[in-house]
Length: 320
Image (tube, rainbow, N blue to C red; front, top):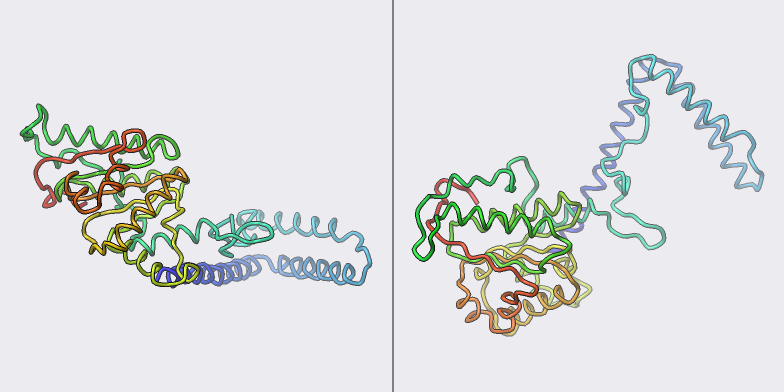
């Protein structure tokens, strides 16, 4: 399934190229309707470039082609401006300047462009960026009650303000700061919203993220476990920030789930990669279900930040 989604991301990139070419043709038609001389100049410019290529292939050094092309370009730009069009109106149209909508970057061995990787991760997570996506800016403390928490001299709203600051600090320090963040507490307290807010902020800082529900993640891991490694792409191993939502909702296969989850976490720690977990489990329940090895790494204060959510379920007024 993961490989199918990667192919889908590449196909979408390919479709953009066709859309861009259609837009380029539309712009040329519009420009030449306004000024037929542009079409003549463009044709002469293309013929000159092709002639130069033919001569070069015959071993003859073309003379004056570059200078003539510059003159054509300058004249076309002047005509565009005269007719109220932008100077770059006839330049190639790209939605991604890094890969020019090819999907790949780099010299020699090509690598996937970040635009493809970002779309691939969206497909894996089942979510797309939008104006209403969770963010720190849209996080509304007013939806949390002023109820005093039982074991603290503070209210749920004040506690959430503190937790938000910690989450924002964690996001702003990637890369840097603690490697792991554990958000735990009962359901309906805003854990998922803050997890997604962290992801958005880190992406805004130019760093790749991947958000996956724990059940979907472990399904991918099991798929890779039963297949040859090269058959299944496993982006969650090396993405700079992995966010695992709803840990504890996945079925536990002791010989697969626990070992593979530990291997994933250990790999990411050893390679200084950042991981965020959210769970409805308590710390004791995490240890009971996932064992001491995983729990000890999530609780290790040298590399992990643990935030406990408390209070009343506010899902009726706050969509996480």
